[in-house]
Length: 87
Image (cartoon, rainbow, N blue to C red):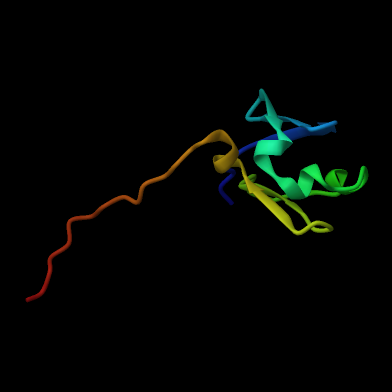
């Protein structure tokens, strides 16, 4: 299995998400990130599942998903192969 990211130390304080991704610390404001996480009860943000590949995080009790690439602003473009077009 390909590991996209290493996710550790997910922590919430007030309106802030603290997370370590690939051995770097990041801070995100929940107001601009997720209204579901922002409005969640105190216990709900701590009930999360990290995908086995490290692609994203899922909060089942509030039905929220965040991709790590999305958090980091990483975009992927499909690779283009030379193709012959039949006419």
